[in-house]
Amino acid sequence: MVFWSRPADARRARALRSCPAGVVRDYLSAPFPALSSPLSEVELLAIDLETTGLDPAKDRILSIGFVPVTGLSIELAGARSIVVASDAEVGQSATIHRLTDDDIARSVPLPQALAETLGQLSGRVLLAHHDAVETEFLAAACVAQFGAAPVFCSVDTLRLGMEYLERISDEGAGKLRLAALRSRFGLPRYRAHDALTDALAAAELYLALSAELGLTRLRQACSR
Image 1 (cartoon, rainbow, N blue to C red):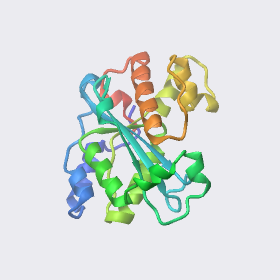
Image 2 (cartoon, helix red, strand yellow):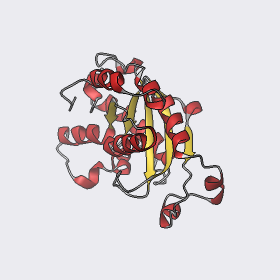
Image 3 (cartoon, helix red, strand yellow):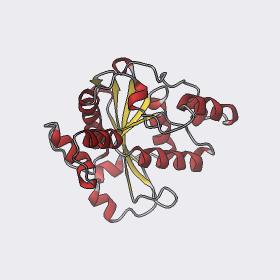
Image 4 (cartoon, rainbow, N blue to C red):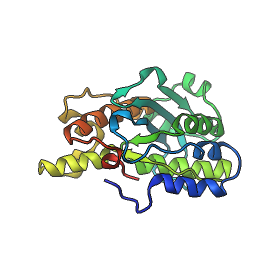
């Protein structure tokens, strides 16, 4: 199911033409997989962001977790958790997202965190649960840091979950939560509010949903 009138790779190519040299241009230089690609061959990057709030205009990224998905396999060797450094007081957010003193001590500046994330995402499909959060925060942060916004090709497990619940006539907002959907497929319950754990949880749910829905091509799974 595709919710954009213009395919993601066409939007990427258009953005590339006017993008200044740097991190975002390097990211945009790699084409996305074709929408006709078999899911068994598509490379994705499951991503989760932990933030101080839900507004990209005023809230900030606390941490980024990602894990590669190659075809139908989760590549745990490529998993990464990045804590973002800041001079601002994070207050209660540090407790909610379980950031320890050691986590904060090994934090990196936001430009470095974005560069590493986009480097891993280049040429891959972004995978997330409610992908609008990840795409909007990453875009806003890149504009602020690099003066250019990336374009994403993404798969949203929330949208796939919505399609699954519609098929079995069991809809409801609370049932679309990551943990609630995972429980339907017998997937283990993980502690929430950890970027890497939530990225892994989304990756596992994606594999379960794509099998349950009988998805075989990227265009069937893509949300943007």
